[in-house]
Image (cartoon, rainbow, N blue to C red; front, side):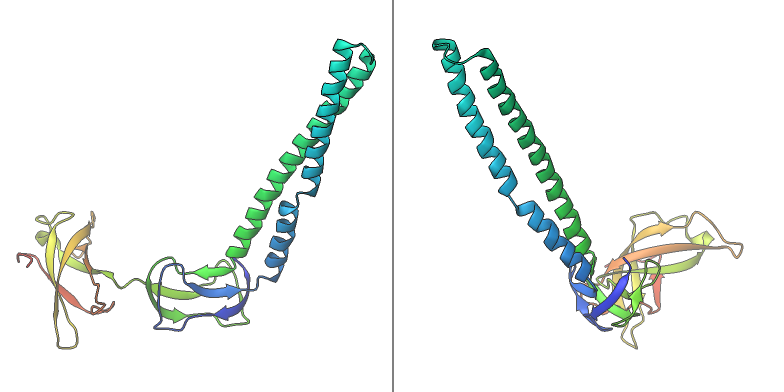
Length: 231
């Protein structure tokens, strides 16, 4: 969504929850549009007046019909005129009801546009980079920031294709992550095995494992133990 940035609510390293506001865009026009639409949608003056007119004409029509059927003190033309007025009032009420529903939908659309002026976190994660500042203008192709989910990480490796025939999707493998002299052992699940073997004879695999404590930092080196039984 294009617009001028009025607030950046996070800095690199910030932990955020899904739904947290990360960036706010100028929303003055959208706020005015929502206020205008709400006023129109919430106004019941016309429709209440139309309901009252229908009720009054219905009572008048019923009375005229009784007189016509019992005493003949009113003419058929008078009865037809009363019925026409009632039907026209009903049609007007129906049109106002349609207009009211349209205004309600347009109000919801305006509220949705206003909500888009707040860029929210799509998932729990850590902000690793902020690439825009207050006062700058963002566009559809411009990145605002980088958010990563470190609770689930993956290890990629290019293996000798002669070692991969025994692997299968969903298989558990032991992964050893180098961590500044304090190796971390993890158990991961094979989620990708490349169907292509490179000219070098290597084949790519990807193993994903849980990282709830965040100790495994993305970018660290690791090894996978193909013949070991995960513990």
